[in-house]
Image (cartoon, rainbow, N blue to C red; front, side, top):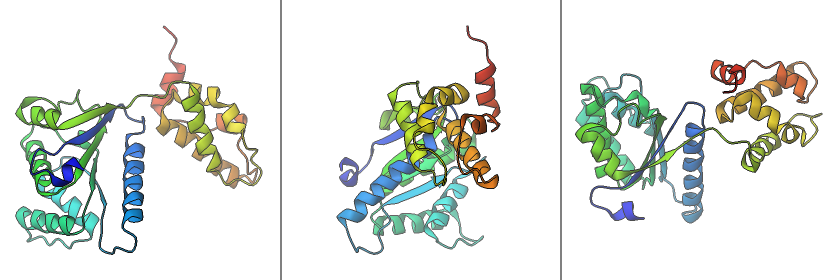
Length: 255
């Protein structure tokens, strides 16, 4: 509400942490929630785009980022269109569409130490000043990657609150997450509560990483469909190979 009527220096939010800790999941779920609330408040209102979601391309330039916004909005971009034309078109549509939240993922692809990275940062700042919306960034270990360093970094640090994402501890919250994923299964012979009962085993396998957990359960579910068993068990979970980071965490000796 503050950002909607602010003239400049709008406040934002940054999600930062190790890979696999659920940043993209949290970002997309946040956007989905905001869009659902907006559509309930404005039923039947056509032409509204309450939430925008883009990712920062690898080795991005300011034009590449502007084109990502245009692509999300379905705006045609010709090779002759310069960055000013693209930015003006994007800002015009987003203001008319009453955008509320702009989600920018994979921000670790931006390096303020390079000229292109600095220009991308300036473009994002320009968007945030032109568009009356809240910007939410997400990326891997952003502070360690220098996002808050230098003049531009200090500007970002002064306008954005940061939320650090970490692996889930083996608590009731982890069990609840496992239970939620289990409820989403559509396997005919799966016994409800099986995965919840294996929550400690699942935490041991994944190290509390939501990305690894999602991969493990989805992989076991696909295997259950393909082999016709239509259920997940500890034995079937054991057959699923996880990402190297999860395997390393599992085999690393305790200190």
